Image 1 (tube, helix red, strand yellow):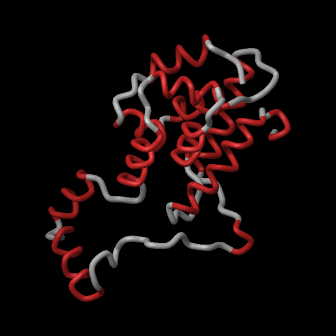
Image 2 (cartoon, rainbow, N blue to C red):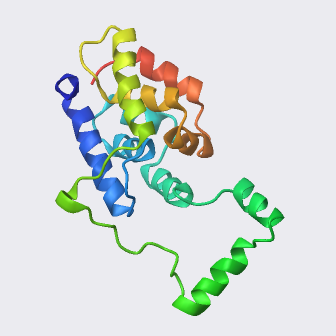
Length: 179
């Protein structure tokens, strides 16, 4: 399937692994794909994201903020069991030092390979379906981004958190087909 990817799309998939490693994540998620797409300077999808007001630095901050963290609903559910997450964090930092729960260094895997999450694999599959639907012969960054929007995973959630209108972005991508 990767032989059908344009150079910018292949670069985005490769860069997603770099983002996952830099952030210390054990798997490549659709949010890492989104970070890589947004950082691409000459891709259709990067231009569409920029036109929608997505700043790559703000996107990265959003991914860092939400990736692997418990949400408010989770914290509330734990509090009904008598577990106060703030108290747990304070106690851990008291015993092990400030920032003990934060991952300071990326974890290394044998061979440097980081596997894709189920959601990221779904995005790759959906990108192929989007290319077929749009009658394109190659899979570009715009198809990857359409796959992210369609999958509605972590990447889509990050875009929503930044105030991106997914329908408008989809329309821009579908009518501005290219690389």
